[in-house]
Length: 419
Image (cartoon, rainbow, N blue to C red; front, side, top):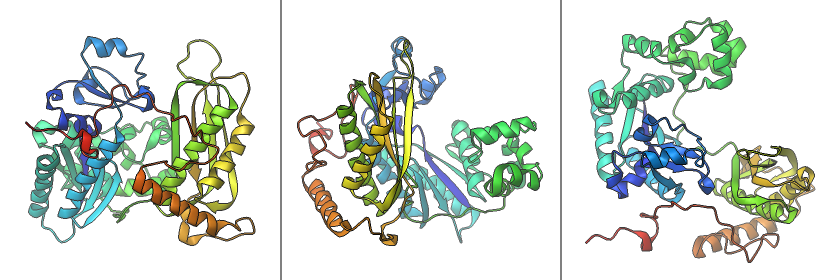
């Protein structure tokens, strides 16, 4: 049996752990620079506040309903996530950390009663030790566990956060009551294909011929169909799952028009992304750089430019990646335009141990030692104490985070004081 353990309204729950007066009140978390809503409590959802809602457009709704607003505090959320995942790993050996607030686990050699008891223990212990409420869906496959988790969360008062699809009758009932577009792995484009053939529910999808699914949704869609039929095709991916691409993007507090300012930003993003790359012992062979205008600007043209290029050799060096990213930037930059957001995406990732040498990477050993030294200094004295010359040494770019909560668990000066 597989279980999906999912933290309920995770970002909002993290804020509530240290501010219990927020319980029962609508809470929203904003993206970088306090731009859009990226997380909501159930109370905020009931007010009709959608995901991705621009904060400035919903200012009246926030004020009228006394919505509690927070800037995203990923340092806090990441630390609490590590604590939750650590608790799960202590109780179940086969764990796949799927995202910051989700983990799949596999139960082998347990009786059904033992599994149910263990799931309820995990819910109780995580809440007791961290204050984070979680829901667990249990089923014979990972895809059905996702469906079961959705039921556990939607009907939490009846399920107490735990629901098991442990027979065929429950499986059929669950699939009849979930829309095809809400099934993990379907996606927006496949949902449109399914609607064209009048497939609306999960059960409608399962009843499609295998040949049609494979032809129109590839072998991945066919595997999903088998999963929903109760036949496992996906197993636990043990250990830390490295990312397939790494993105660093930011909205600017004010619009930027000069190439020098954009170059500094792209260089800094390259340094940040490269550090993430080295942290998972990977290299990249492709880079995408993009810049765009303010999408919420009422007047004037809206524009979005991006360019992807292949590196002459795979690398995780901040120097090489930033140098190449800036070259891409100069090709898409246009004068007399103002930009509100920029970003860099590293793709074509491969393990550092599989590095293919070429004539173009003669300084690789020197750069590896340099990057290792910089990472060591950052680890000891704080991030980005050493910068590239192309980064602005005097100016520290800060995101607009006017509603940022304290780092209760990671900064000694910000921990709660108990009186």
